[in-house]
Image 1 (cartoon, one colour):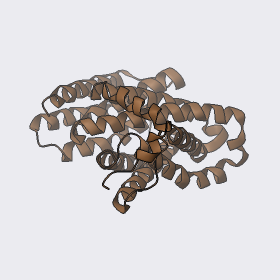
Image 2 (tube, rainbow, N blue to C red):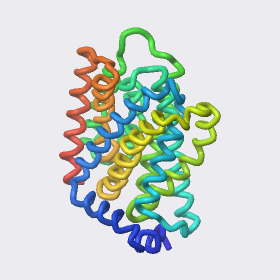
Image 3 (cartoon, rainbow, N blue to C red):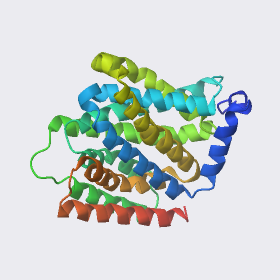
Image 4 (tube, rainbow, N blue to C red):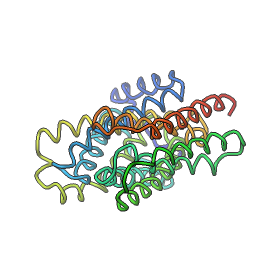
Length: 300
């Protein structure tokens, strides 16, 4: 049994919605899945940043992962019967989610959203460069890297702890891409994602309870946390997992070069974190790199 056994989990009426969702995702071009997921994730991240003062980064991350896990488990109702290797992949995927979410949220507390995600982008950029066998893909990756450097140039110094946390998130993001590709190979539908999200929630929840205490019971925090979970976890990770099943991971990594621009725009529109001329030039670089990688994906 190489794949997660979802026959019993998604076959008893409960999986009909999940199956329809998977069919709908399958009709959408992979690049559109990735871009839609990025927009949803970064707007959700901007909303999440507004909750830090009330529940802390660990608390918001715990709420996000817990709600996301509950929604995905209800939608997919996966069976927990799986072989050991599949379980290790699912658990590893959940650990990458937990590490990526908590480290980038703590980075958001110290540096602007767009800058943090720009630094975090070094993770998927590394996956794209080291996994490429085409010279043209390297060119797009280098162009995106130039955009990253430009977008990172902000007035004044950056909090070194915030930068370090963003770099840590980059490591987890690279791991998420690699584990996500394995998860797509070993599972069907969204069952593996649901179980992986539950693993991530279990890992983070104790820290969230300790940090935020009773704030996790605040109705406002819970309501916004549910929105954040849907926008920043349920929708984007479902879309990205489907995209990873259908395009090479190196192409996916370069396509994600649009993420810093999306994050910067979300920070501007939701948080009022304005961009300067140099940063807008960087946006052009990463957009061009994303378009180039999308075009090259047709022949990949």
